[in-house]
Amino acid sequence: MSSSQMSRREAGTPAAAKAGTVRRRSAWAVAASAALLATTLAGCGGDSSEPSAGSPGEFSGRGPITLATGKDTTGTIQGQLDRWNSEHPDEKVTLVELPESADQQRQQFIQNAQTESDAYTVLNLDPIWVAEFAANQWIDELPAKEFPLDKMLPAVVKTGEYFGKQYAIPFNTNAGLLFYRKDLLDKAGVQPPTTWDEMKDACADVAELPEGKGVDCYAGQFDKYEGLTVNFAEAVASAGGTVVDAEGNATVDTEEAKKGLQFLADGFKDGTFPKESSTYQEEDGRRAFQAGKLLFHRQWPYQWALANAEDGSSKVAGKFGVAPLPGLDGPGKSSLGGLDLAVSKFAKNKATALDFIKFFSSEANARTNLKVTSAAPPYAGLYDDPALRRQFPYLAALKESLSSAVPRPVVVQYGDATAAIQESAAAALSGSKSVDAALADMQRNLSAAIAEKK
Image (spheres, helix red, strand yellow):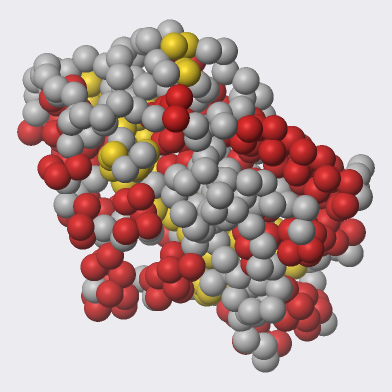
């Protein structure tokens, strides 16, 4: 959620970043997710930003490096670095934690790149930033053949590509899931919903129970940050629409997009979404769900382990289940989130960086991450592992969600694109603009952001 996030340089020449300082992850943990682009790169950038042909650059130099990543809310990354550092005392990796907010992470990554600083060696990026970073020549092309990409989910591998070249390696992937209070649904005699109407009906049934008192219906990531882009994109996709089409054109002036945004706006009007969720990011909603305040929560898989904690931090441990997101007429569609590992163009000790990415993105490490943090692995085989399925029953729902997940728009000027989406979506959710007016503004501003590179 997520999954689950730097500005630009035209043909290698620095240009001022126009990406607004919109708050926050996704994030678009996550994430997660503004639009639906089934193809990866077509129509999203002009020839001016296409990298020149040739093999990846030389990765030379050995010694200490840094890993720059968003705030580690799982508390597990340092333990992984300790394993590497114990075996590589002369090539230690130092963790550089950036803010929890994806938008703030992106801003700091951009500032580091624009100053050509070597402070960050390996970058743990939201996949939707890879095109922007590659186009601006802020990250190096990687030797794809040295990584087991054939064992990973193809759609996840593509998140690290730009013009057919591999610039980043998946560390994990992500798809949005519906966390629900199984104990309360069982008590009310209802099944996990597959449509928005079914979800509202389930909330009404649970509200009639004594146990349902004080439990709100649903929340997602609705603060004005990347998470809102993800949630908006998912709502549009779940209503049958797209935010950006396969030709790279903005497509939010459609009935499908209107139905998606209307669902979100109506949720605040009719009380389906609690008012306080208008400022929820991933961790805010997680805390509310774990406190027993939500019947349904749209969240990335990492919530599974934390919500099941038996140390007293979660009131819902053992009481919840996980299902694919609901949609307008049937199961919805998630945005594709995750984190991809890249090497800064300006870093030192790149040979060490390459070896560290091989370690950090390995199947063994992905298996460990799944067991410890419930993070979604990029390796296809882990989803069908019988032992893992017994330990993590939600893997079936996650695999289903990933199979239909859609990437956010691959736009080189991504900062401008996500800002356009967030601004208009937030106005509709707050009621300061009608859904029609918000989408008209979004269509115009999103088209302008896309046109900047055409």
